Image (cartoon, rainbow, N blue to C red):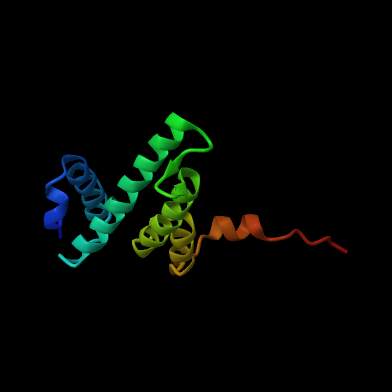
Length: 126
């Protein structure tokens, strides 16, 4: 189900575009199940937007850059952690995708007489 953004997201064009991008990605992967996902995607957008703002301050001012009382780099690292947690909810991190893949059932192998023959270890004749 394609979800719609929370009301506060639509008032900001940058956030609205980000929301559409994340919502489309999750929808195309079959990972959205209803309007409740709108809240989670909105949180992802908020954190991503805050991260990019902190990154632009860091890029402009360098290592000593601050956003409020916090160093921009510290804020960026905190945002990355939060973003990873939310992305993990949708299996969009390498670790969560790997865990999901490990739980997949292996396809049954068909009996292939040629493969069986090729995999037989030769026995020495006495």
